Structure formats: C-alpha cells, structure tokens
Image 1 (cartoon, helix red, strand yellow):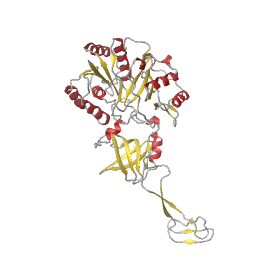
Image 2 (cartoon, helix red, strand yellow):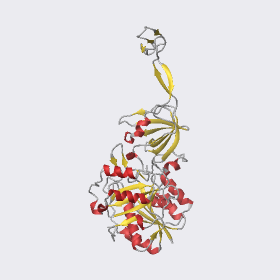
Image 3 (tube, helix red, strand yellow):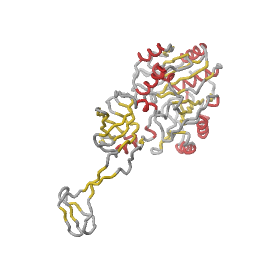
Length: 443
C-alpha cells in the first residue's frame, strides 16, 4: 500500500534539522527493504509565520509499505533526543501517516493555505480527522501537525526544483564549515544554468552553507539532480560528509506569491501579492530603509524595502508618486508589507526642471533666484518669468515590465531566480542518495 509520511517542527532556532531526521528515516526505510515512490519532498511553507524556525520547511515521503513500516518509523523517532527551547515552546514535532494512492482536493487546498496564511491547530486536527490521517506527537504539543499535513498535500507535479543536502557528523556540528568563496564561485560559473542561489556576488558571500550548529553541511539547489551531484563532487568535501540526499522541493518557484495573487486578505503574517499605486514619493527613514505608501482599491498600506535587500532598496528609491507596481511579500505584525519582489507595471511620466539656453547667443542661462527670472551672463539678456522650464522624460533606470529582486542573500527560499527553468523529470533511484556511515540509530 502507498503510505504518505509527513514530518514537521523538529528543530529550534539553534539546533536541529527536519531534513536530517527525514534522511535518517529514509535510510531506515531502505535498510528494511522498502522503497520510495518519488524523491523525498522538502516543502517550504509561509515564510512569515512568527513561530517558524529559519526556512519553515516540512518533509513528506511517499513509500510503498505496510503497517510494520509505520511502527518502525514511530519507534525510531521515539528514541530521538530533541533539544527543547522552553522560551519559544519548541519544538512540537508531529509525524503523520496517510494511506492513499491519491491526494484529495481538501488536502491540496490545505497546502495552499499553509503557503500563504496562518493556520491554527484545531483546523489541522479537523483535516486529519476528515481524511483519517493518523498522527503522532513526539513531544508535548501538536503544532507540527500543520506542516506535516501541508507537506503530505503538497503538489510538486508541475513546478518544482531539487536540492542536494549533505550532512556532517552530529558530533561535529559546532565546527566551522570551511568552504572558500572562490571555490563556490567557480562552481557557480560552471553550473550557472542548472543551479541557483549559490553565492551573493554583491556581498561576496557563500549561500550554500548554513551558519548555525545544525547537521547540514551544505545544500545545492537546482533543476537537474544529475548536475547537482556533479556540482557537489566539484567541491570535493566528501571527507566531511556522513550522508547526502536529493530532495524535490517547491523552492525557487514563487508558488506562495502566485497563490497570494488571488487572495484578498490583508492580515498580519499573510503573504501579499497585488498591483498597487504609489500615492506618495518614497520616504527614506533611519537605517536606509525605504517606505512606499501604496493603495490597493480603497486600502492604504506601507510597503518596506529594507536596506539589507540591496538592489531592491536602491531601485525602490527611484519610484515616484503615481507609479503602478506589483508588490510581492509578507505582511508584518504592524500590517506593513515586507517587500520580496517588485514588478514595474506602469511608470508615471517623470518631470525634470532645467534652465534653458539663451535664444540670442546660445549660452546656458543662470538663475536669479527661484521665481525671479533668468539672465545670460554672456550677452546680458534677462527674462523676468520663472526660470525653470518643465521637461518630461522617462526614468533612465526603471522600465515598464522590469522585475526587481533583493540581493541573493536576502531572498526567501521560495523566491524564483532569474535563471528559472523547467526542472528535469527524473525517476528517483539509489543514485540520488548516499549513506556513508550506515548508522543504525538516530541518537
């Protein structure tokens, strides 16, 4: 029978990784003679949820299994030593099992909602009961049920990418990941058409390595699993790795923004993606952040292009009152929009004040003071009218249709990259994972 397994909320801000536990489960699955029907799914959800940890990722697996498999996985995770963060009441890991060949529309819609909105536990429990999905809280609390169900319901049949995640030994998680920028830059050049998000060239920063004390050593994202393996081998870090596996994922697809485009709810922590009009010129505040006051229908909101977003912040400064733009992002706790993406729809005509040239001698004239006239120092001609003429022109840097994104290091996991292409349709097999140590226990 086909068993769909969901897992979420296993880590805290400082330690742990849900994908690592999933890799351990997958190793156990193959060790006992079971097989995956597809790549394991790494499913990113609403990036604005306040109680998320880092990338807000959940996991699902599709396995050809039986009741023995379910008991095997439950018993294995019961032995796992989760690191508790009492201040944030995390983690609240939940393992869910759904026995079905197909995913019902109600579960697909739950996934879409988890990408763009805030879901409470009661709603998740109702969905689990409706579709007879068995779930097992591994500690106190059931918050992980939301992500587990959303991962099971995720539709990765059309738009998706892949990520090769390589893990280090659990006893080595406090050491520095020593990969040079120049090496990753070279890898990025060689595999630029098939990978994305490897480096931030503006800030000279490596993006494939996390910075915390979690088990992930590196993650390479792209559109072809075979190219990901080649890129990984190019880095020559095998001696630092205990296992690696390739996930199919919704990263780099903008799926949260696409769904939010049809959403007319403007609440804190919801995803926002609408065409708006600027009703004031941009305002630059302390710290260099740019505030855009925009209107959608009869609603006025502030949208923020943070200084850290780099090029997005700089281009936001060039916008003008009357410009029509599409803004994608998340609504923060103050009901302002944190901008992830801007698409220029229609620029208002720019006006520039210039001093004319003398009609007698052709020299550029000088101002005698705003509104007091102009004079020509060359031939002494004077004109008593206001000196400044209005000249209409287009913006030299902004163009209709332009897509403006933050610097690479400030982008969301779900954000689509400039080199987006349709991912290769590949059947999952043993060549897309490698378990070096063949550990028998998660602990």
